[in-house]
Length: 361
Length: 233
View 1 (cartoon, rainbow over the protein chains, first blue to last red):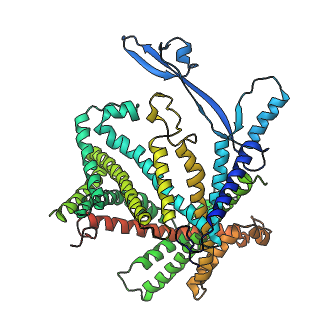
View 2: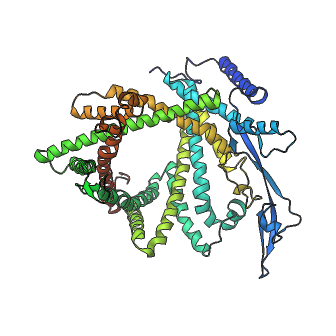
View 3: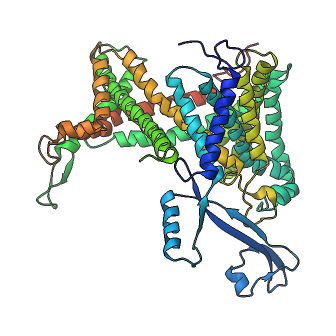
């Protein structure tokens, strides 16, 4: 493979003028398609949905007052059970779930057929989503460019993927693990008023606080690995991680894999099934019996092959040989299915390029 | 003591506690506490990973090593995701608490983070995996040689599985009636038969082997027999 060209250090990199010209051309094309042209290339449509919440208060029979944010059309407000709180402005926002072009055209046709009627749905072209399709198409082509050879466009896409993935998982870990399981017990008041309003007040806040200090300390010790000295201390949280994984694996490997698979392998070798002409009568089922036989022989022979404490000679060697054949069939089918899975993904990417982006077909 | 004894004790205690939590209702809540700690520590490992990513790429940029511009793109993309995700830019409010800004869902398609996922990360990941279709096939073409019975079995099986999922299968053997005595010569029937009966047996034995291996390895760690995770000095 040829040496990669780099925009910073490589001698064969494209000239900056060409790159800027290409970028300007792409931006102009996107702007043209997004803002000015008739729908030709990519255009995404969204359904604008307005949301509104008003703060309402309810006073129970015990005199206790509760407030909640409800829709103005909520039955509780309509019935007068809950009263809107005076002086609190309603909160409004818009969501925009994606719709297909066919849905958009159907609504437009409905409007054209019934002029003057109020539309049931507000569907419109979304510039930001259209831009997204262009970005996705460019990145898809950038990755495919690796088929030609390693090149700067591919490297840009690859670097983007690394950065975006790292950020994605870090943000995900922060909001799904750190906030509810670490920050919430350490600062319940702050968390409830700023981050998680649905957080239930704990009956043992002191204990929760103390317990939350343990993973905080372990995490701190883990990060100590980046310090110039004393990095060995990170083996403590590492031991905790391995211990937890080992404890979970002891149970899950037996409960989810070993026992169910062993049970499935223990089948009757001679199977009798209801006969086609008379369901009350049981007859010998050749194919099911063969299937059971193949299953039992396959499992036992492969396990014999995996058993390395005995030398694979004589009967053991012959059985292990049969096990290898079964393994080869398993690997062959796994390979075939993997290739087909990748080809399915490939066809989905082509479908995106041709249908969503170029609107061909 | 600090470098070996305490880590071994932490590992054994944690593992034993989780096993005990499965069997004893009295220790079940302890197990839940340990699992909560685990998810926090796992999230912090992401910070460690991010720190490493920053260190490596910043070092590359500062020393102007070849390809430093790609490192700058990586860091810019990483920083953008953090800003979009942590600040929940563009996120729709939480309907139950619309005035609490950070209660909104950061993953919806209206948010900048959701946009980046839908139009940057998702197509990049899918195309990267799709690209493997070419390389798996070409690597297989170069590596597989039908030298002996085992290699032949693997090749024939793969060929049947692949062919059965194309229109060629219908063309070649689609004329054999499904209810005839020779239905098994149909490529789709062969493929189903191989996957459901033969490959399942092989995969079952592999799963049993993996389970036994995982069980033994876990116990070796918990009992302090395997200490490969400890520093050598």
